[in-house]
Image (cartoon, rainbow, N blue to C red; front, side):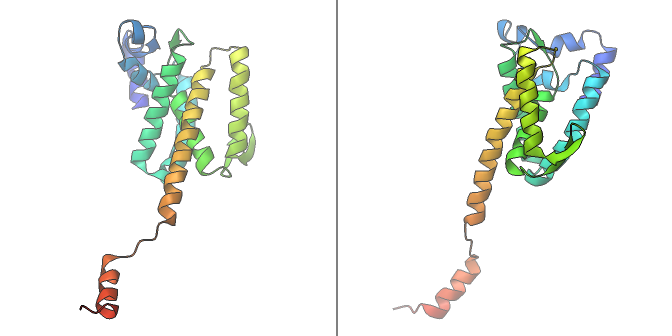
Length: 193
């Protein structure tokens, strides 16, 4: 989808202007921009970086939580990142907030998962900490990157990760006994009066 959207951006001059996130999302009630901006990219390099991160971290998370939950993490993180970032940036586009949500969720679920980041192999929780530090510094030394969107997406990912861990822990600690075993036990040990 993201590659197809990028091709449309190249060949239809007004496409990006119609769907990227800006003040029109609020002032003109063009709320679709909070969603559509996730799939737009400013350049081929921007697209390739996001696709690489989505491929690497996305496959890992999808394998752990399933396709439906993965899609929820991606879309929800991207939407919340865009809702927050529209207050700080005049224009915004890209999947980075959604991808940082994926990374945040992975960090909570598998903190010791080894990843290649900054030219080194390290646990994902260390890589996430370094990305957070970099984005905080980027707020004070702006470079045109949506650091607040990154941090927002990562925060949403952390929250979803904690929720998924809690659900997994509760499900794992529950003892389930098949109905057939219960009926057999009743027949064997309980006499009717």
